[in-house]
Length: 380
Image (cartoon, rainbow, N blue to C red):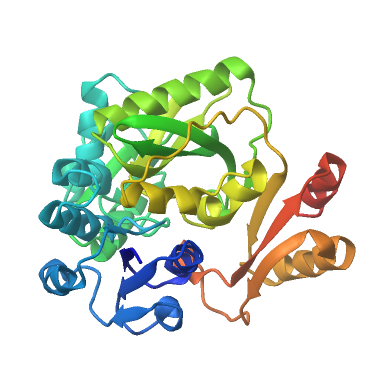
């Protein structure tokens, strides 16, 4: 029996553990015990923080595993690729890891290849912000995801407060200030093996808007994208993955497209998209098992040629923020219960939702009928 090491044990990693077991693998999972949903499903669980690389390496040497991976988390990737390098597993280089987990390094690399990015500046205090940068601006930590510490600001007073918030949540206390880019938001999922990138899915994103742009939901396939723009998106992202030296595994790229079809890269992660995009939505909308592909790449098993030209269904995930969202979820459940493939709703409280980790639940739908999709979107 082959063995695989999985870094992390949250809700997303639990899906990875279950898929690995479905594929007949022995699973070895590393994470803090608190909130370790995957603990009970793992064959072996090690209560070690995912950032404790040397402690994990010490245990990993004893396991004699065949590969290592994680999904939907930037925080785990430095450990995944460090262990992969030390033990000769498939992974990405530590250079690539730096480029895909530090937004400043990512921006520098992308603009060096003339890839379309917002104007940006690395700052530690308000005096570092160049006067020629015009409001509105986006402030974000260089090393966080899930909208943590992201704020749109309209003036210097808001900028100061946003910088304080971003520095507080940043691990390295570094912050990017960027020009605000108008347009609709999308994400692109790809799988890469030995430097060959294969497109899987284009997803439309719905957010709370300013100031924090927290994801409210996702829809795949994205609507109203013509074939020429589709090709351009895929071309830009493949060039970006090459620029960031991504050789193996999943990638999740976020872009904005304005009214003139200009593309701007927001960020790129060398991991599967969170929010159930990679773990659930890709399979619903395309029939392609993204999670299984990630495992195969990690084990060095050749993946098939993917010719994804036709979507088989619409995949929609919606998150709960407030009583209105809960009311809409009940309405969807009343009229379209057969389309709900998974849900998890928490008790609503008075806590202000400032990033994706504080959302109060979700539900995922598989909607083959486009007429039903429009009816559901009208409810939402």
